[in-house]
Amino acid sequence: MTPLRAGIISALVTVVLDQASKLWLLNVFDLARRGAVKVTPFFDLVLAWNIGISFGWLQNDSQAAQLALMAVKAIAVVALAIWMARSHTFLATVALGLIIGGAIGNSIDRLAYGAVVDFALFHVEIGGNTFNWYVFNLADVAIVAGVAALLYDSFLGVPAAKAP
Image (cartoon, rainbow, N blue to C red):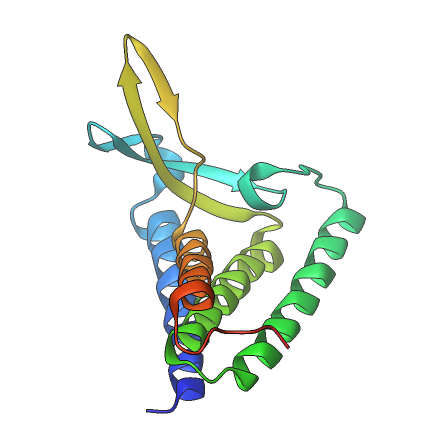
């Protein structure tokens, strides 16, 4: 399998799994009606609508702000796709596919709902205080995994991945 084909497949699989998980949680499991669902002592399913960017930064629900975020995301996806098409290492190409798939998955949410659907919450209790991580989704996981793989490939891969 060529690296480009693997990258495209990783992007498509990411979009499908991300959207399937969100549709199932919203429409079948009905997470909105159930509220927070404790899965383990450190992991809950919760419904959060993220109208901002990563980690809920720049929260703004105005139409202009949403369009601006979509435009920036579209430009980023095009730039990443060009990089992916030029990449020569399998790991970097798959990593870029993960990032692209995650960005597209979250963009679909923004188009469909006006916000990104987040649902996974990790937390820990220490000394009677509960510390929560940001609520996230599978697209976010793919983006973080893709960035980590790119960093690994850039510093330790042979040959190192380079942006166009």
